[in-house]
Length: 427
Image 1: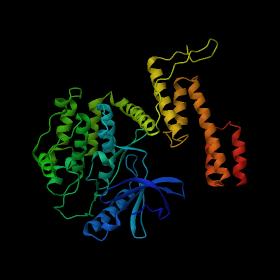
Image 2: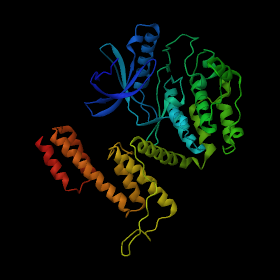
Image 3: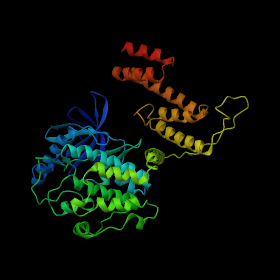
């Protein structure tokens, strides 16, 4: 089946992924100039019993998540059908899912792990209070954006109170991350999500799943009967406090488990204090380095993260002595690599928190006289205004106006704003 050009008002720009059940496209909302992700169901499934249940799950996810508003949850904007194809539109997340990062060999320190799991638990604390149980917490449903933000996705088999999709006895979830009650096909509540989150926590700490097996039956048997090794037994660098946290999170008896996401999160944050306060920043920096590497390889290029240090000529005013510490220089080098990567792929001034202009500015906060960063900002400006001129030539008035508004906010003293303003008025 060929890729559609549109779904409803949305323009289809590419394929993000597909599986046995459906396809996820990258789309574009022309009304508000926003990138979106669009999830669909394979048309061939819609006439089957499985397809009808999948459609129910589709609606359920749209209804469950459509009313949610949380920084750590992928937002859903709309559910509709077009030419017989049901779809829902959700937030487009620039980043990677945790499963992919783990598979690529990404290792996380205890403080980084706490940052990730705490974000998941914050999302669950919010949804559980609204009576929504996710039921499929796993690394594939956890996304880390390019600026280090954590997003929980895929509420497709979520249960909303008083709105069960399946009869008791159905087993929904992913075996390695399912709770004992899920494995038995019993009714589940919020504590099942906390068990699954504990499995993800264990995997991040130790580097492997706590419950293993050659097939689904063997894995589920392990979930029901096996006691995983203590994290410190597998890795002595893991703080001992995690042994108790894992034991409680993975308790077979729901009464012995954490009863709320907030309680789970509180224990986690205590386990790494005071190091936890640095976890978020470390995660953003290390993720940014990963993005730089990925962009470099994808573009067939390579650039050094360590730049040639420039000799400051006498008479040049610099902050203090003009000599950066090794730590400051390393930070500048990392930020410059991130800035160059953003510039290479055209992320000049957006998205907020993940663009070349802001990265160069961060360099200048460390070293206000850094000539490479100053030159980088000029290159950003030049390309920005050149892009605006091309948009004007194409008659794209709304886009020109947006560029003008950005220019007035970001580059208020640039003489080219007047030219851009005249271009906008001519449209």
